Amino acid sequence: MEVTITTLKKEHLKNIFQLIRKTVESTFQREGFTDVEIMNGEIDRINKRFETLAENSGESKVLVALVNTRVVGTIGIDKLSESFLKIFKKTKLKVDGQKIIEICLVYVLPEYQGQRIATKLINQIFEYIKSNKYSYYALYSGYADTIPIWRKFFGEEKCMLKSYFADAADCYIWLNKIN
Ligand SMILES: CC(C)(COP(=O)(O)OP(=O)(O)OC[C@H]1O[C@@H](n2cnc3c(N)ncnc32)[C@H](O)[C@@H]1OP(=O)(O)O)[C@@H](O)C(=O)NCCC(=O)NCCS
Image 1 (cartoon, rainbow, N blue to C red):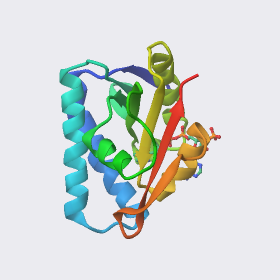
Image 2 (cartoon, rainbow, N blue to C red; image 1 turned 120 degrees about the vertical axis):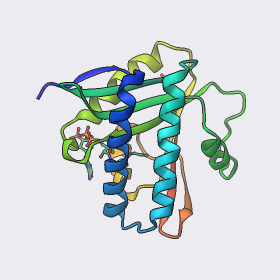
Image 3 (cartoon, rainbow, N blue to C red; image 1 turned 90 degrees about the vertical axis):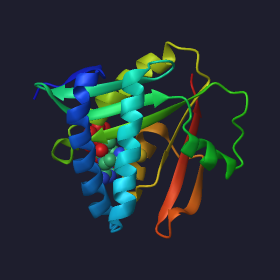
Image 4 (cartoon, helix red, strand yellow; image 1 turned 135 degrees about the vertical axis):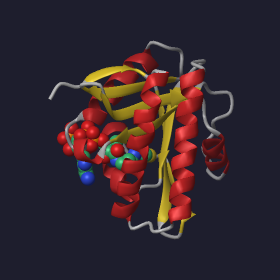
């Protein structure tokens, strides 16, 4: 299977919205989250971020993984989102005055997971991060199943907020210096 990594273009958005619905539905099911309203809110929030990032580049960048012309995976970097700033306020991590970039929008279609597509996307986005003047990168996740995967890529989390998203959904936070 040949996977091509390229920069997000507006013409990818329709395909991405399908990818996000499928991937988030499957993730919620796997995690045992049953609230459809929360799931739809999450899908809308993610799709809006893709739309915004497709409009203006600024400090952000989104990469998509294509098989033929189909988008099967995504990754982004962006300035810290409002949600992330709220999370940081609840931790003791010091982020003021640092040039921090958030790694976000990491999604791979369920039927393509486990085939190193996220690995390719992460490696490629790091080329970009390292060639720019960021001091730290950060990411957060509330999906228990993905925590071992993030630990492989980014080491141990810096902290965890118990039951941040819901009773059974903790928030894990990574904040690492860029070498
Ligand atoms: C998390 C996700 C992006 C990973 O994508 P992927 O393409 O399947 O990941 P890769 O195939 O590149 O695997 C990366 C590493 O994690 C490992 N891995 C994959 N699934 C794993 C699991 N369930 N438990 C432990 N390790 C796992 C792989 O073996 C690989 O490690 P290796 O290189 O040492 O073998 C994908 O599973 C996904 O989209 N999940 C649902 C959405 C999500 O949670 N997104 C993040 C929002 S915060």
